[in-house]
Image 1 (tube, rainbow, N blue to C red):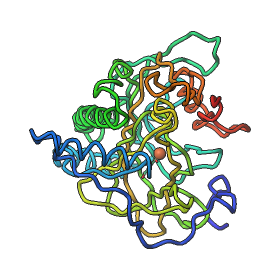
Image 2: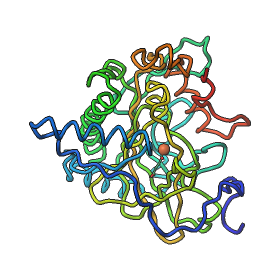
Image 3: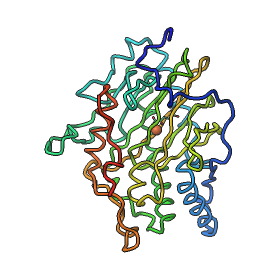
Image 4: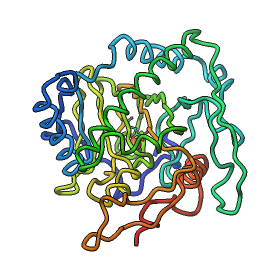
Length: 347
Ligand SMILES: O=C(O)CCC(=O)C(=O)O
Ligand SMILES: [Fe+2]
């Protein structure tokens, strides 16, 4: 196995096949009708979003309204930060008390990911349950740790986060409409949202056929908005045939995916789809996901409008904060048990 620590090695059935071509058919959706006064265009957009959520669980958007400069600023700050010596990055290392900051030890399904990360929350000093235990009512504050270098990092991250909140609001409105609900149906769940942003760096890997940048997983929040660079590596498990397909990078676009919470709210009409990240032996890759999560107090369950006598609720309610705390703990260290999944709440 040469230079690669066995902690990174995927089981045989999860190793990526060599793959050079990009997938066809992942929907590319133009959001410009949102700025058009003609509602006919907006109706087409809503149906495109609905089909994409139903058929793929993933889509890309263009003309999304996020200024290119805001994205370039955070991308450039991320490159500068990850280029620092490890000792410098470790000055803002996360630990068991504070889960935010820098780390290079994430595990997905108990195999180590080939990446380094800087995490921050969008609402600083936000509250989350202190532990996943249901009888523990203690809450803890999430506090961002900002690096000293590059000096602009805090400002550009906060500017980017504000744009992501606006975009997420628009997307949630479209998703609500596509389910036949009011545009603002989801709004109250996000009043004190626990959304966070990750700066990801995937260094070149000497064993790209054995390790993964991020192992297969589903996102546990409501919605993810991902900025990926032009290297490529994100693979989605295509619903029609279960094949892992590579998402083609499109300049100035964002990749959107439905998370577990929308799967539950929609009572399985939309599905949170598995995905993973392939690494590369010669190129490093950067990506920036924004994970839009409800407030910790929210009990996630199928929406009453989408449940009736013919369509029973497929999930029992679960508390979002406790779910999130359980996920965070299993990412932090290698555990002997599988991490929590919405399947555990299936009726
Ligand atoms: O880097 C990427 O392309 C995706 C990362 C991802 O899926 C995640 O962090 O949840
Ligand atoms: Fe993900």
